[in-house]
Amino acid sequence: MARSQRQLKILEIISKYEIDRQEELVEKLNEEGFLVTQATVSRDIRDMGIIKTLSSDGKGYRYVSQKISEDDNSERYHKLFKSSVVSIEASENIIVVKTESGTANSAAALIDKLCYEDVLGAVAGDDTIIVVVADKNKTDAVIEKFEALLKN
Image (tube, rainbow, N blue to C red; front, side, top):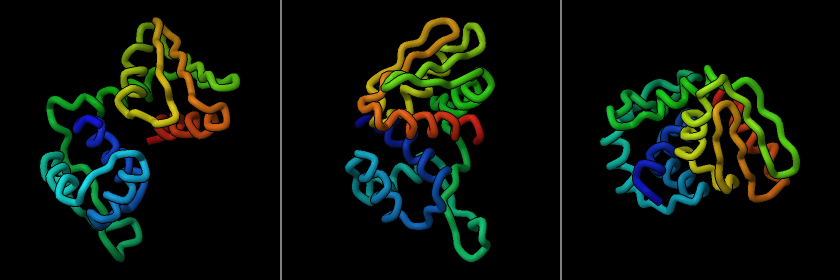
């Protein structure tokens, strides 16, 4: 998988979990289908400006993103996703994401960038995104991921 996809996944993982060791990050990436070494993760951490900060319990440390590179529009897409999504509904393995008029393409771009393994693809119109999930039993999990993006 591409470097940019891996780095977006790293941002997703460190935002969800209190990761304090590179080995933990390697394990999480491997679970997500990104087969990487500790050396690769180390380079990504350096290149992305990820730093360690005090964890929420104050007893340890965790990785956080310090900066977002100028060529990485993920933050812009994330903000647009949050501000444009009106509703999320599903039927079997199809998720319909309704957005404000004219914002569906940008919101779908974030879905594509995040490369959820259960998502086969997303097609956007003007104010609607159709997301096809590989297994209908995974639809609720994908919806939960989308809803988490709206909360963060």
